[in-house]
Image (cartoon, rainbow, N blue to C red):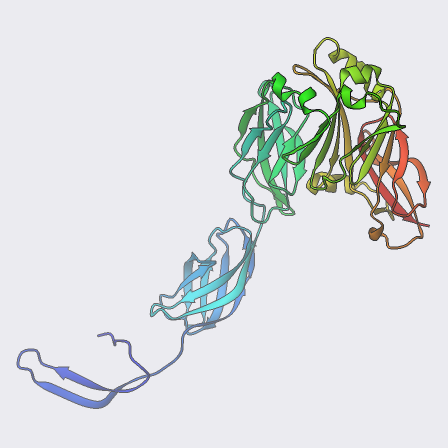
Length: 427
């Protein structure tokens, strides 16, 4: 027979004959001994791959025969038990992370070793991929996906439906990304994968969406001029002829510096102003400013779009890089230099309802000024210089002249859209 549960100490034992009711009695005939529940002293090895199936040894005391094991709440397969001190199990599959190890005896007593086992390895494949168009834009799509435990960053791949294969687009630490500069009225497909120092996940299932045809109401127009519109991390400003008429100031200033949460600052300039307006424009954000004549956009790319397509605009975008996009360029920084501004990307486009063309070089010089964060160096004994990333050489190149002006914009003239950053060097 099996003894029932009982408190520690001697117990009387009774035997009853069910036929005639006869009774036998032995005082203190059995003693319950409190030997305590199980304890865990160590787990070896204490780390393993997320796919599971690795043999580990749990050492402790009072492991009853038939004890079970859980890691992070998931049952582990018991391979063998060596007496009351050792259990060998196979790890279950788990996400990256550190988990408690638990041994449970058949009587319900248990022991827990907090943070007893760590899983490592390449992250799992992201799920929940969703592609949505940005309303009223026609050349941009927002890509979103679910967060993956243990991912250091994500890589995004895309293609047009007519393309044969996917191309790498960008990397980011966020679980979303805005893809800009796409063709209107075009189907695009995207995939994403998670990456950490142990490797990369498989690519996710793809998701498709369409860059909607931009109707008159969604194209910059007189109704939308003269004011900033902020949506989906993008602040956009469209110039209108009426707001420029009669101005005699040296610069026409567009101040977007209050939109500190914006990831992209965009200025739309109607073709009529690109072709004829003679006053300089001063575009200001919280981290960079541009000074230029609209004629700087009157390039061969612009003339391909205008006047062949109506309602043409020159569009300049200033994007502040972050996450994987920024980290990929930071690794090329010259040694002994301190980054004191964000890495920015300046892009220019001739844009109409039906066609976009990237402007590769301005027709006139554009003044560029990056504002440095003086707190990043903490000393006046520094010189500052703006650098341009030469993608063909894979290297940062100094542009403009050095300055010792502390924490003020470092200005230079350039004819190239692209990537820029302000660096500091000890004098």
